[in-house]
Image 1: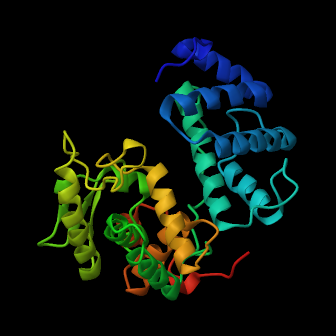
Image 2: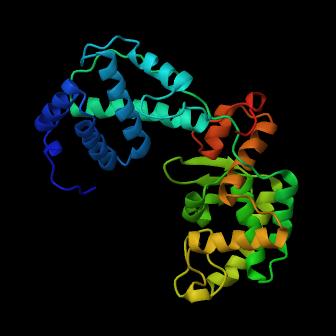
Length: 314
């Protein structure tokens, strides 16, 4: 990734920059280093910057000097942020998703300092929190209604495509960007296995219904592929010629209207259809008795908690 020229490019200058900032707990200078590292390594920077600013403020208030921090300093900071509130925030960290994001931001903060090459004290990181299943999800009747709506889509070529997509999103737990990256050879009908590509590459076993839906869609896809001058290697392609897209790879601009139409026809209107489908898949796996670690592997989500630990909506 190309970044503008910066003193942080040079390892020696970077180390001196961060060391000076730590000496006075300079949040602005440390934030610039964290922002540079986040863009360099492709990290999500928002929570890292929030954690770093709060941690620096708290360390300064405690009278700590770098690198002479007690080993339990991060534990004390975490306790303050979770039981009371972060120093620069009006409210405590409550939601499990927020707790996990802050824990990851705390770990990223240490990674930024290690990347800068400054002296690192021995610090104990708080235990990694887990997501609880409090996110909105599709109920079984709602998912069934969406499948029925997809099968009755007014445009015939979109019917089997819609059903296959719903099964992969709402049952197998495939993410949209993973859906778009699937190739023909990634689906193995005989073994009913789907190979998912990307950062969280994995194999996902499919139910009989999902595999049959994919095979039925492939029958329509074969007729579309013969119309394209260069057949697409991707599993999912556009099934209409709107804006000249017939046979081209499926993307978010064509997936979203397909799902919105299914919602209209079914009368099911979740706030976020993609998230509701994903968490329906997570819950389904847990209800089948799969341990959380296996659910994480199959769906690619960061973390899940057992259904027995589920809490109500906040």
